[in-house]
Image (cartoon, rainbow, N blue to C red; front, side):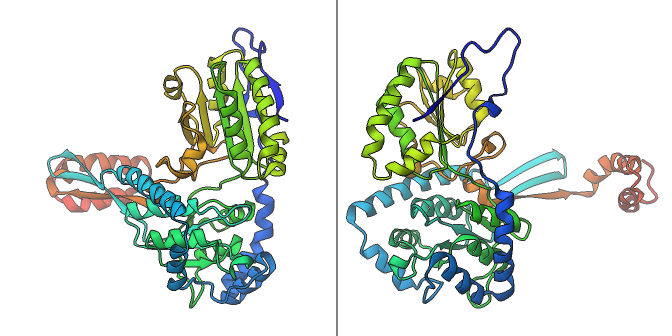
Length: 440
């Protein structure tokens, strides 16, 4: 099911390999999708509510009676929750909130550079955010928690949530999504999906939804394309592609656990990536046997099989765990599991991953729901330069500069000289005029 990429015995002294190019990913042509969503976004900007009705009918096959969900519907969704589901939601909320509050950190950092020379960095919450929750192959209610909780912990006061309308729920988003919004105190919820939801947030729709400053949350390629197209009109968190899991494992790993975890992420999407990196050919064989046994038992076996047999999924055989660390750092997976001896020590050497799951008792599924960590993570190798969605995503840093006269006088000549060196004399003059008549 998983093809094999054998990197053993391919390195001679002083030789290197481009592991990032060797371990492939799913095709994800966002630029082509931008041209598909461009007319949709332009239509929402021009026609507002009428455009939302048109595109909702075309893509979601239902036009909600009201795009904004009434408060009574949110409350009713909680009342009909299964008690065990509600308990699971509440545990996930409580754990994500505790981690988020710790992420908030200091709201103000003051540096005194000299007597009377102060620079303060203030972390200020973004005024208004639009949070997108997918509702395609799976209605990811957990994404409500992952978006809303850190925004609230950051101090964002205006939060709107959008999720696609579902024909089976009379044009409303999935009841679990509505219930979580109510549990979290979010009252502004829209039954709008796809690129049109991103455009609604970016431009605002008169009489319905005010423009936001930031859009966050995962979605399909058309949601991602709309975020790319409208970046600048509105800020975005990232361009998230298909989900991916990489597992670095040695001969001590439990093949049943490894196989189950690969399957868990392949369940998301036929384009999901599942990559096992191991120095044990024996483990690779045992995992293949487990996959053959476990996949047919899965509810979404066809989707999983497509993902596992796709070009984006593979077993990568390496000479040793040292080489394995190089491979996974180059791959920069969204989710990285470590099933090795002294997994904690190996984790300390990982520099590129959206989230790192240490040992067999820390599976990715835990992080998807109740670990307390974020599950909105960088994909497509972007973990080499980007982070997941956290409280910091909803904060902006502002420097406050407060120098008194003596403090400015101390560095005045340096500023004047610097300005002269850049041929910006008016910059220097702004200093000089403050001390005209003085000799420095």
